[in-house]
Length: 386
Ligand SMILES: [Zn+2]
Image (cartoon, rainbow, N blue to C red; front, side, top):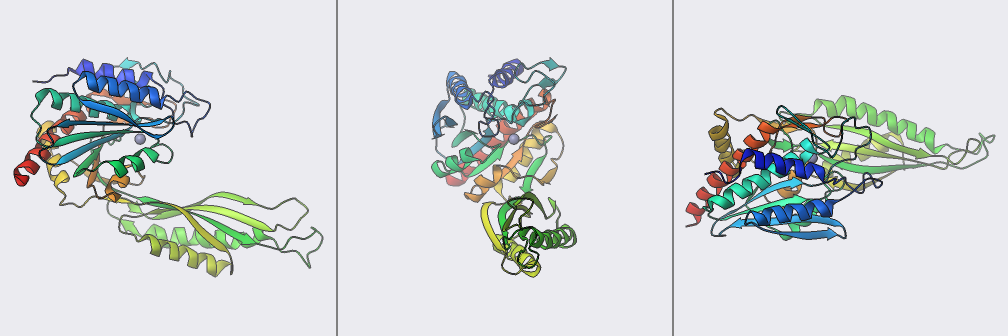
C-alpha cells in the first residue's frame, strides 16, 4: 500500500518551490535559503520515519544526508540538488507555485525540486513498506549550479554501491555525459609608447594567432570526433583580457578556454593537443590548466542499469530510452568516486529560463521508478551477499 498520496507529493513539491534556495554564489543579491530548505527536508523526512540530518559543507552551505533500511545488503543512493539558479528575467512568480493541469510552475520546479520531491516521496514510500534489505541513502546537496561543493563533500563521507540522480531527463535514462577542462592562456608582448612601432610588440595581436588556431582546431578536428551517445567534442574561448591603454603596446593578453570532453577521452591527451595548437601559433605562450570535471560513462553491464531498466518497464510498460547528455552533472562526481551512476528525472521546460515548469505526472512516474529500482537492486544484492 502506498503510504503517500499523489497530493502529498504535490504539496511537498510546492513547499520546496516556496522556499527560495538560489545559489548564493550565482546571485548574491537574492534570497539564498539553502539552510532553510535543508531544514525543511530533514523535518519532512523525519516525519516519515526516516533518519535525516544536515551536514555542513561550508558555513551556510548544507547537504542533507538521510538513510533508511536495515543495512544488511547493498546501498543505493538517490541524489538531487537543493539549489537553483537566480530569478532575474522571470516572467512568472518564482516562489509561489501555480498549478495548471499537470504543470507546476516556479523557479526550480523542473531543475530540480521535482527531482528532490521524487526522491523524498520514494523514500517515504519505501520507509512505510518497511521491507528494504540493505540501505537507501539520500543525497540532497547544495551548490550543483555553481561548483558542486555539495557533491564533492558527500562522496568523501558516504559510500554506495550505485546511485540514481534525478535531473530532469524526460524520464529517459542518462548513462553518459561530457566532462570539461578549463585553461588560462597568456601571451606576453613588449610594452611601449603607441608611436614606437620599432619597440612595441602587442600581446593581443599574438593572441589573435592563437584564437585563429584554436577555432580551426575546434571546427576541423574536434567536431569530427564524435561519441554515439553524447555527440562531438568541442571547445570555445569564453573570456578575454588584455592591454593597459589605447596608446600603449599591450604587454599581456589572457584568454580562458573551455574544452568539453567525451567519455572516452584522456585528459592528459586533451591538454597536450591544445598546448600543441597554442605552441604552433605562438612560441612561448603559457597554458595553465586550472579546473577539470570528468565525463560520465556508466558501464552498460552495471547492475544499476539492469535494475533501473526493469523498474522502468514495470512502471511505464515499455522499454526505457538510454541517452547521453552534452552537459555535465553531479552524476560524474559519484561516478568518479567509484559509484556506478545513472540519471532518470521528470519532464518539464524552461530550466534557467523566464518560465519554468514541470509535468507533475512525470514526477510521480519518476517516484515509482525510484521505488521499483530500489526494491529490485537491493533484493538482488542482498540475495548475492547472503
Ligand atoms: Zn539541475
